[in-house]
Length: 294
Image (cartoon, rainbow, N blue to C red; front, side, top):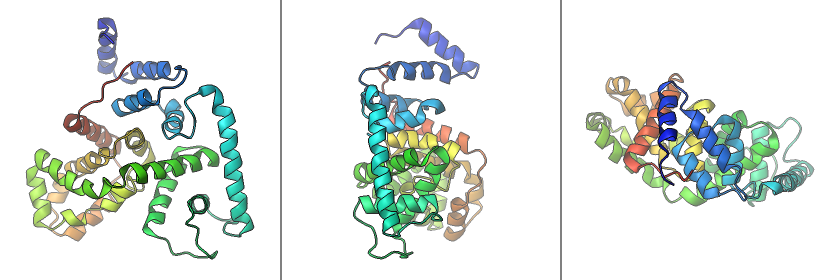
């Protein structure tokens, strides 16, 4: 599509006066009127722009396949999703794996285990596998973002399935990517972390397997998940790098790997929106900006 000078002028003006999202919201609304919805265009939009909060859950559900591209079928499909949800929940109640007092995220975990054939043989089994811990961390964060148990469960389930299927082979290589890009951005900081033997002890599980659940507040986290859901796990590398760059002065003053890891695991919750914004800019700088077709 040819550039529209008037549109570009408006975009620049909106950005200067702090209304950067006005044009993006209009563009997304155009995409959401497509019949059927073009999932690839929605992914491209989500990669390039922040999703307006009023449309975020809808876009996530379409990209993750919870809802089909044909909007007229959404109500019918969600009724099937609810029926499946209630059937699985009822089965767990009958088997006494869950009770009325069971925390919601644990209910979601048992439902996921039952559907994926990984339910423990006995009730009362409290030992959690690492993948269960990761699921619970993501579930707790999703519960803060999404209203309603039905939507919340389906989004957790499909997010985890997509992440494991699509990015499972890439996740082990993310620490090496972090080292590569940090060397480009701040080799002095990298050398300090290496001299402390801290690079191997950074909280990679929290960052790359829990996707920053329990690390970033949900208001910032959802902007990172926009990128993960729409097709990039590499954004996680740049969020991790921006955290390191933001707290460079603090980290340069620490000389023990354990102290560095402890600080990063319990990092301050201020300025996380700025950290995510800078991380997205770094991601676009190093990986390019997807072309948007609207």
